[in-house]
Image (cartoon, rainbow, N blue to C red; front, side, top):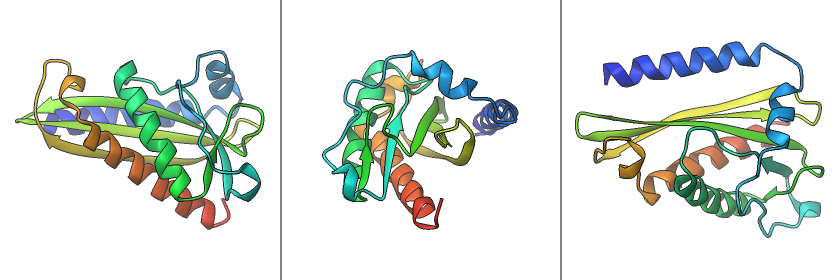
Length: 166
């Protein structure tokens, strides 16, 4: 667990330093990258509490990113958050992920930066979810249930933040 905490501290330090830059480069850099294959849900943007574009996640392999995308869609819909394409969003959400295996468990560490339309980071969601299982790369042992927990916690916190007047 010491290794996991050390890595988490390092990841958060790098992300904190990158957040000091108020330019739109964080959003600009993801604007040309492909979005997750299914990044739009069925919530009517007119009745949604927010319209959010989910940028490509960093650190998760494609299969995990797709599973996460699917779960984010359903969790967002349950909270009346519309996931939309670029150009119509009230917020952009960019995720950074790592999977660490230690002591018979794999821990997924996640950080989501929320940006306003001007490209300013306005909120951060972060956490970790541990589950039994190990693999050499970490990600092979990450289950759909673990990613569902990440999606649920992410959308719960995003909805709570939006409800406070973001």
